[in-house]
Length: 75
Image (tube, rainbow, N blue to C red; front, side, top):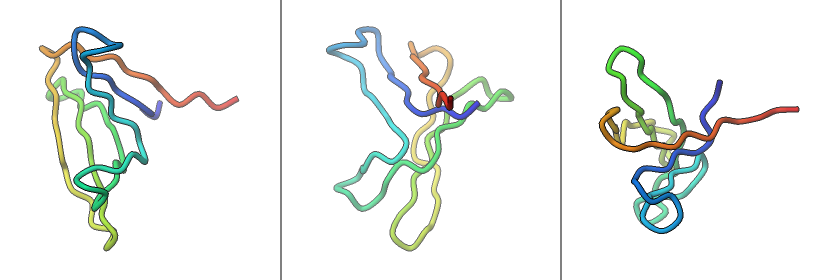
């Protein structure tokens, strides 16, 4: 399943960082292209894309961090 959003942190409402596919980051020079679970490393990776369509690994969170995952739901 495709991941649409992740939230990192212990307090979902006020203290967590939220990352959503399509969200602009780095002063709007990039946007979140893909959020993917890496089962080999047991981590979540965030990939970003710029205007030249270069895709780069931006962040990686390990399973030791509290993570809430929201998947795409297509009806």
